[in-house]
Image (cartoon, rainbow, N blue to C red; front, side):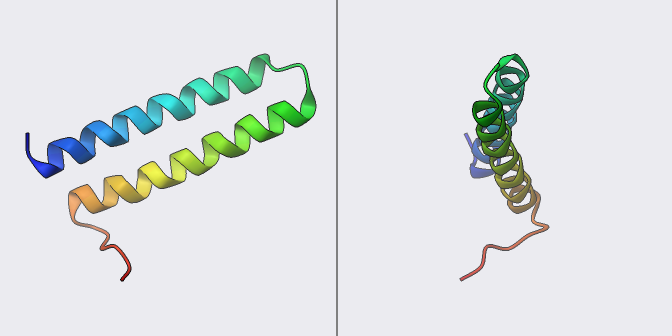
Length: 63
């Protein structure tokens, strides 16, 4: 498997995890838990966008 395939798989897994966390947040009855889950999902989505950009060659990692 090439490095770009591995990055694409990682992005898919991250997006699935973020979706799961958002769904879990919607079911949460505690407002603080809901906020925490939504924030975690947002961070994962942001990271997945960065990884996706690196996989496509659009973004270069900072040194």
